[in-house]
Length: 373
Image (cartoon, rainbow, N blue to C red; front, side, top):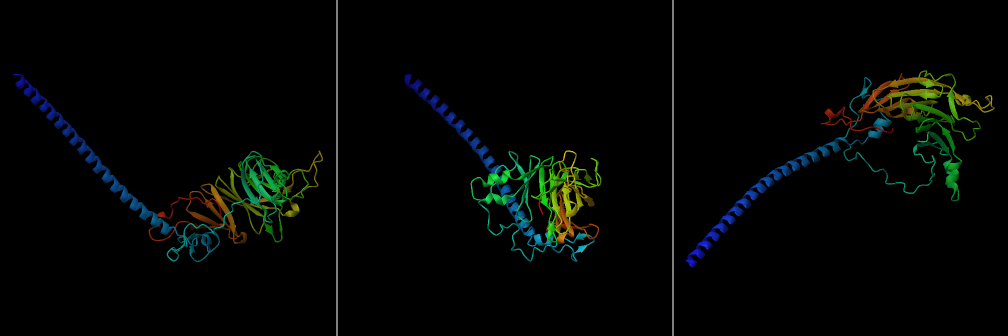
C-alpha cells in the first residue's frame, strides 16, 4: 500500500510539473508572438522613415541646385536691373542663370580672414545699457553709437589707441552724449558731397522719430539736435513735426544719398520717407541766444520729397546708382523693390527666388527676410 501511494504521489507531481511546463511554454509562445508583431510593425516604420529620409535628401539636393545664385549680389544690388529683361516695371524671372555656374556655392565663407582680436575696446560706452547700433563717419574718425539709454554717443575712437592703460576709458569719458528721448536703434552719417558734407548724423529711434544731430566736435552750442525751420507745433506736417522726421512706429533703417543731401528713413509702420535736408550754410544758428543766454536749437530745412507706403514693415533700404535709385525690402515679400528717383519713383521688382526648372511654384514663396542691404 505504501508503495502504491508513493507511486500515485509521484504520478500526481509529474502531472502537475507537465501542466506547469505546458503553461509556461504557452505563455512564452504568446509573448514571442506579440514581440514578433511589434518587430514587424517597427520594421515597417523603419522602411517608411528610410524612404522619407531619401526623399528629403533628394529635395534638399534639388533646393541646393535651385538656390545656387552665383550672380545674386551683382544682379540685385548693383547692376542690370534696368536692362532689356525688365518689362512693364517687373523683372522677367530673376535674371539668374544657375545652369551656367553650378559650381558656385550659394553660401561662401568669404576670403578666410576673420577678426579675432579687438583693436579697440570702449568700456561701457552707454553705461549699464546695451549698445543697439554703431556707424563710422566717412572719414573713419568718429564713431556714433546708439543705446538703450536713449542716447546717441559720438566718440573719437582713435584716441583709445594712445599709449596707456586708461586711454580707452578716457576716450569714453570724452565722448559726447546726446539724449534723443527714446532708444536709438539705427544711425547714419551724412555722406560727402563734392568735397564737403553736412556735419549731421541721423538717429532713428524706437518712438518713430529721426533726430538730426550736429556731429562736429568744434560745435560750441548747448543743443546738438537740429529742429526743422518751418514747423512750430507738435502737429505732424508731411512726416515732419517740430522735433524732426516722424514715423508711426520705430525706425528700422536710416541711409543718406551719396550725392545729395537726402536722407531715406524706413519704419516698421511700412513707410519709407525721403527728406531733403538743408545745406551746411543753414545748419546752425549758434549766434541766436535765448533769454538765459544759452544757445537755442540749431535749425535745418527739412522737406519731404517722397513718401511711400507698403503692406509690411520695411526691413532694409539702400541707395544705388550714385543716389538715383532707392532699393528696399519689405518683410513678407519675395522680391526687392527698386525706385527710380529720376523717373517719379517708378517701381521695378526683382524676384529673389530662382527661376530654374521646377521652381515655378516657388516664385512667391517667402522663407527669408533681407535685414541689411
